Length: 278
Ligand SMILES: [Zn+2]
Image 1: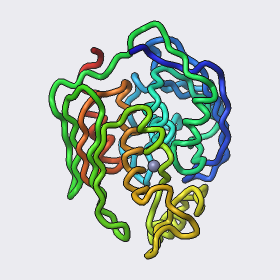
Image 2 (image 1 turned 180 degrees about the vertical axis):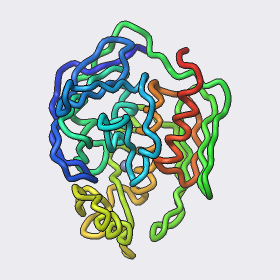
Image 3 (image 1 turned 45 degrees about the horizontal axis):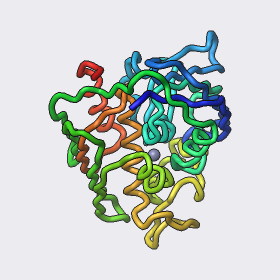
Image 4 (image 1 turned 30 degrees about the horizontal axis):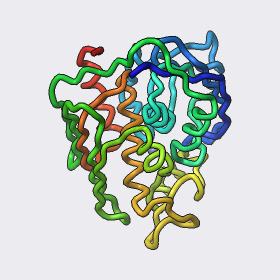
C-alpha cells in the first residue's frame, strides 16, 4: 500500500462549531513522508505545526473538542477533518487556515471527505508507514475505558451510554468504503441541557439544529437522524480523528466504553511514545 496525498489544491470555507469564527482552509498536496501539517496564515510568521513533531498543550482537549498546539499556535476541533483524512488514507497534506478553529460544515466528516475526493487522491511512490503497535495499550477514567490491541486491520468496538440516548454498541472492521458510507455522514450531538450549558459558557457559537443533533426526549430537535444510531457512529468518527493525531495510521482492534476526546488523547499520548515506523 502506497502513501497518499491530494492531487489538486482545494479551498473549504465555513464557521467553527464552538467559536463561530469564519475560517478558510486551503488543502495542498505534500511530499512523501512529510505527514500532516497545519499552517496558521493569520498569525505573524505563519507558524507550521506538523502532527509528527508537536507536543500537545496540556488540558487543551477539554470543552467538547480536540485542540492541538501550544500557546497562540492552536488548532481547534481537529477531529472531523482528521477523521476524513484517516478514513480515506491521506498520509501527507498541508492545511492552511486563517483562524483558530476548523470549520464545522454539517457537523460530520462528509463535507471534508467530499472536498478531498473532488481534489483527487494521488498515490505516491513510497510505501505507507503504519505506527508499530507492539503490545496492547489502554487507559481509563471513571467509568470510561479505551484500549487498542495489535491487529492486521483497523476495527472498533464502541459502547455509548448517554443520558437521553441510552446504551448502544458499535462493532465493525472499518475500511475506506465502510468509513465513507457508514461513519463519515454521522453528525455531532449533545443533549438539550448540554446545548444550554455550552451557550452559557460562550461555546457552540457556530452550532445550530442542522449541524448538531440536539437530542430531546423524542429524538433530535428540528432534525431527523441519518442513522438510527447516528450519535454512536459520531463517537467512532471522533475516535478515528483523534487517533490520527498519533502522527501515522495505526492498525489495531480498538475497544472503547464511553470514551471521549480526553481519553482518546491519553491513548494517543501512549501511541506516540511507542517508537514509530514499520
Ligand atoms: Zn465530533
